[in-house]
Length: 86
Image (cartoon, rainbow, N blue to C red; front, side):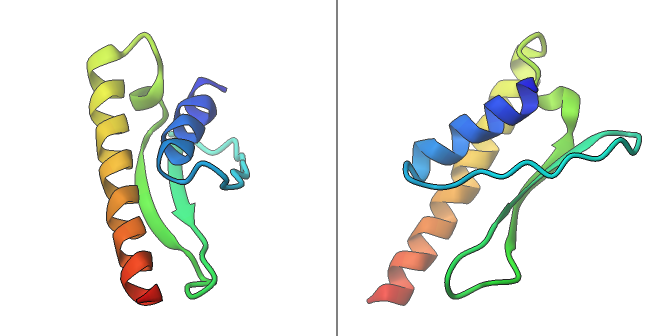
């Protein structure tokens, strides 16, 4: 569940009111994928994907890098959405 908590923190940092839905599988290797569904892009946009361990607290360096990547990609999406609105 650490990976879900970490991913949710990143998403809510950029989109505070967003809904985060977990879609869990038991397939190995376990990979975390973050997709965004917006009003204009119902199919969804992949924000980030990586190994589950990259979001574990015990892997500080990997986790920090992954979190920075997630937030950066979310900020790009946010800018694109703002441009669409204008």
